[in-house]
Image (cartoon, rainbow, N blue to C red; front, side):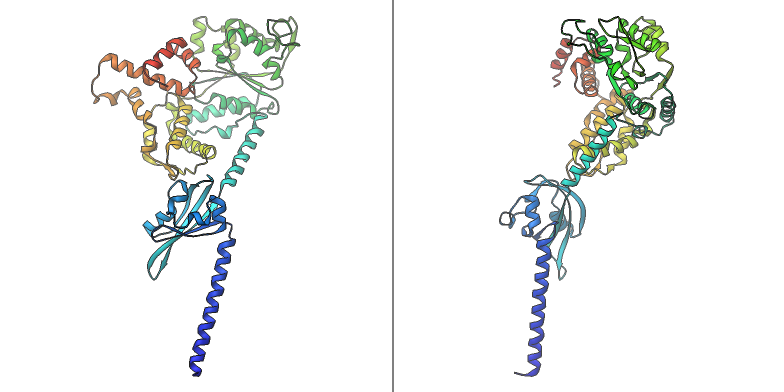
Length: 471
């Protein structure tokens, strides 16, 4: 054999050996990597997967080969199909896989040979455990806070002048054990302020007790607040029971919706403020207590005093350090800040990866007057995220709930000028229906509370819900 031919054959043989080595090396990497890898051809059909892929998806190699690119995607858009369509690499796409339901971050790149697209290769990183650990961390932080208070001043979001002033007033109140009266519309964040005042006070390591005065019936409120002795009434526990004021001793008690307590209980509450002692129901013995009182109301207490529904002497005892919390309508510039904060919150709660909100959507939110205040805004953002597709990462104008657009005419009379004219009865019925839905939304569908706030009987409320087909 010619020497030159022998040399050529030797080079070819060495080259083939190198290719086999390269192939073996690539196969070893492909099989051992912890990230799941899948490869599809130019038709979008799976032609290769590694063991990590079958582990994450729960789909065997035999079952996936030949299947279309989106076969393993439960929620989101297949990165393979996107790459085959655009011929460009993509990164950071969140997907939910079938059948395991695991959440992954996917990235993919085109396979191009001789300037021809022949397929796509994708890598999937399982973030399910990361999400679980993140959630556990958030729960741990929450539990730690619950030992004293759930919220601190850093949790109270807002940069408008009025809101900053309210926050500064609350921080001053935290430094001294003065009785505080938080005033503001429902949903403005009075409870957050109460928690934050306690958390920054010298009592932060002791109990913070929240009492919703509107949720306690007249027959129960005294025994709940001040406790009772054994035999005080039918059904009283053996040995009696401590009241919430005793539970809060050395700490803080937050009396939400203070205007809802009856006049008899107001007398006893006045004694707590004046004498620093309580008397259990059924007992004549006074018990000294050291409790910081923070009260809150969304009604005009001065008007309640004039109507004889609230004691004047108690009003003056509570109104030592009033803090007015502005409505969201008065601080609309804070809406973008609040929305971004709610996005972070719901990303954790719902396992989403929403990055932000477009300017047009923000403008639409700014046009609305938010009668339910921050609570209503939070509910809308949460609902908006729930209704978004899993692969969407930016809240857009068309993602906003229809209620904002529908309710806009209720609070902006200028926008009804060009609407078709309807009969007065139809118009009143429509407004009543929309308002009932809004009240139920703000009260988390609590019909008993809604009837009370609306000043109608529960039977009348159910009649109206049935009339307007409101579930």
